[in-house]
Length: 405
Image 1 (tube, rainbow, N blue to C red):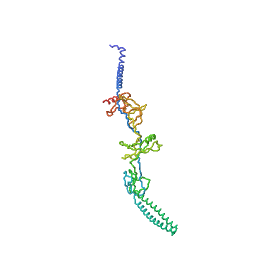
Image 2 (image 1 turned 60 degrees about the vertical axis):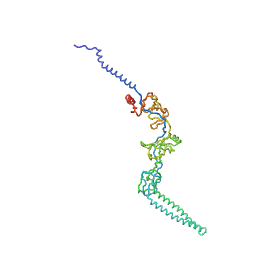
Image 3 (image 1 turned 30 degrees about the horizontal axis):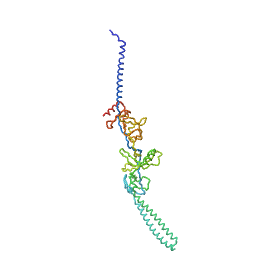
């Protein structure tokens, strides 16, 4: 015997039961999940930061540029006579003093020329003595009218011609001596010799415009030439009028220390093509760390004012301008607009907005909220907190754990 079908209401309830269970399950999970996020966001915590103090200190007012090292004195050594190179006395790259012998040219032809000039001078002097004696004798005879006036004048003219010839021969003799001296080529200045282009036995041409025998550069002292934009002209003239300006030149290299010198030259015109002003500084260069032709970093110090300086990493920029986060006595952060005069290396000079001794946030600004507390960390204590959050709650939690002692 078949049982009667269930009522219509019961069948509808059984059909809708899975859907109701699904809705109830989803509705139960949503509040739990939402409640978890709200709880985590409410937990928040202080922002871990690194701080520094605004200090009143001397920060040089300097102009930086790229300079080229140039010798104060340099000379291209050339021969002034033509002959055979007999000897190279120096080596390439040798330091020489003024007057040191560098090269020797075969002196024999010039010595012969000197001896010939000396002999000719002796001959002319003998003739001149004879002519002067005749003039003295004929002057007396002319006075007694023993010889004619014309004859006396001829003898007198011959003596004067010999005097002129004697002077000419003396001049040739002096030239021969100089030519002989030119066979010994000496250093006209103290410095370092460069590459030697000729060898012993080569023919040297006098006053040749080609490659010199060698080039000598004076290394101590030495110049550095550099250019600065023309807008610094007024400041340069103003500060230079109050005293000598110091210049530091740093050769290339990670461990190089700057060489100290003084500004010695300010050009009298601005280069119109580049809009720059050419300057020159002299350096003692006792250690010879500055080398001719070398490029160096130049810092021209105009003054050494005492200013308020902070780490440049503390500066932040927004649409309203530059600002810093100041940590107050209650460990809360304050957003403070500041006026920056200039940046020197890793420091910024502040003219308005800060007082000496105030504490500034230098790292971790992205998590700082004005008016909320911050957690000041010791830079040497543990890993630094992340300053950029890709997964806010997880990294925030890790940052809080890192700040725990």
